[in-house]
Length: 438
Image 1 (cartoon, rainbow, N blue to C red):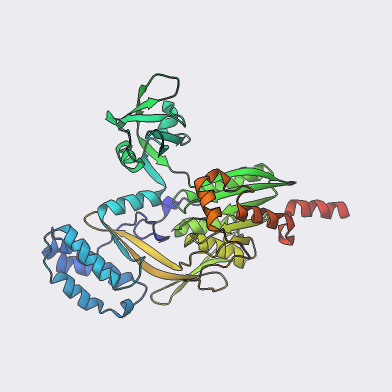
Image 2: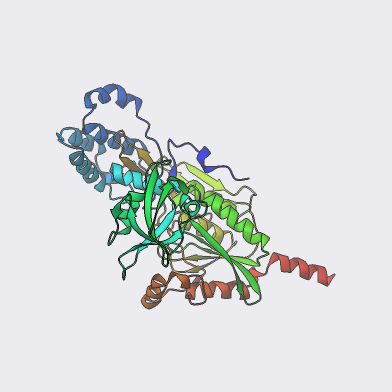
């Protein structure tokens, strides 16, 4: 049984992905607390020095990109900041000197959004919406399973005419989402228009919703039953969702799998490790090296859920944790990797909350694939390289229903690999053949 991701310390959770954060908690440096905190209390300089301390203590490059980090502190604290915004600007300017886009400052709003994203949860009613360009009406695309929206009877195709009495005509999805989301247990009133029925007001109680990041289904491709699994990001719930997908497809007697990591920017390190362990039974998954040169080899633990043939789909937006998983599967020859060259992000970040609700992501380590390959700025080269044309990309983007079908050239090639490659011989079929020979 997989260990719950929530058991890991929230003091410092490693993550992958340029746009993903986590609910790591800042731990103040004791020396700083005694000598400086009293003087800086209730001052914008407090956050400035928190950031400086964290970078000084954790940043992977101890030369700080040849920047005199001590002089940077003196310069930062010598200035007078009349607002938090001025302090934030100074922090960002100081971090830019490191020339590391992944070591970045997040204002409170950005930090709240990113921590919510990484947690794999949101507080709301559990619907996906779009603005219908023709009618300018907010329309429900999907009501998430077991959500308050489902319990209230909201369905795909429903138009949201008003939110708590505020008319939504022409309102964009982001603004509507802000109105719908709120503290779990509170009520929101949605005025729903359903074709052929009277407009009704539905009172829906907000709840914490687990956001689906895994989608899967069984596909019949010729004489082979293929389990297709798409993973959007490595959130805190991704591993348990992946586990359910693999187990369900196993029960449906699939002959092989296609794991689609295209467009997946990364996420939590632990999520990536847990998911890799579902496919790899033994051996290294990834090796990280910190600022002191100390290595940490993260390995499989004999908990693989399947040994069936596997193809992994990747593209130029497959980054970080996606590259960890794809690289491990490729190095162990556990899967064939099909698609385009991946992004090439080989750095690990730790994310901290700061005293005023803002946050800081700090690069703390470099990582290498099991064979010791550094993919930084290079990415993973697929075993079967197939790039989409601009026209093909536009077609798939405009019609997502085509993704994972024969109209998707990379998926079609993955199916060809599963069907024709010697590695793809199903263990189930291999056993049958051995028995028939006897």
